[in-house]
Image (cartoon, rainbow, N blue to C red; front, side, top):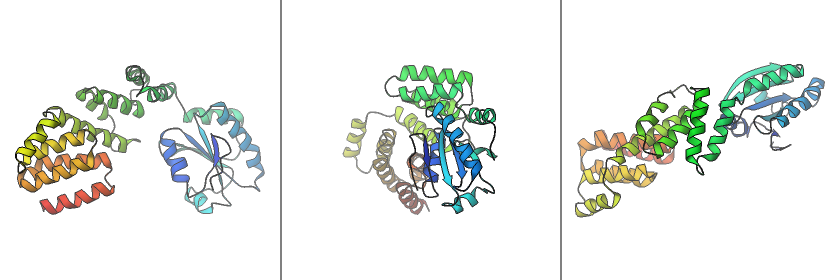
Length: 288
């Protein structure tokens, strides 16, 4: 079921819950209303939830789950009574209540989900990243002045600094996002991208390296350097192919620099992607 009641209020079921709630909540908080058609308190609560969402004009979304239609989903979240309301943020359930609360308490529930002043600044900066990166950088810095641990601001500013070649500061920002952070996957991807761009920054132009490869096709070093440049330019499939060919020509290079660069590309394209799995298997056979 995927009934859209408005742009900010919609019905979801087990099939689209992972995308419409879990993934969506990584960008904007999602309140999930578990209800049933026979539930009188649900009919009392739902209009208030919808009104509070409309007031916030897209800063918080409301997803409605009919437990009669999605009993497995209700069981997954241990819904023992309706209405039960769960607030999701950053891909996780962070707040919950059951029954009908006074409107003042409901407002506090919504306020605790956000967005905070820093959240609002980050949303503005994300819109400006491509059209006005200078202003976006300023806003990200303002947001971090309010909240030094704001993960999306850290990621956004790190990305902008990386594009400017300010690798050291970008790396320092990414160090604040450990494996347990809400945005660990994106931090890993940006860290890999930073690593590859730093490698490429010390290399000659692509044209000159291609000339070296053409002049000496057996040169593992030239192929390695070309692979690094291709990776820094987000040409991941070409980069992996070139790096692998370098490893085939030099076992020592394969087990050190080639392996290191290829692993970073795996992080960049997704460790479980078909491309990463293919070349991970090929690299394993080459090394072992």
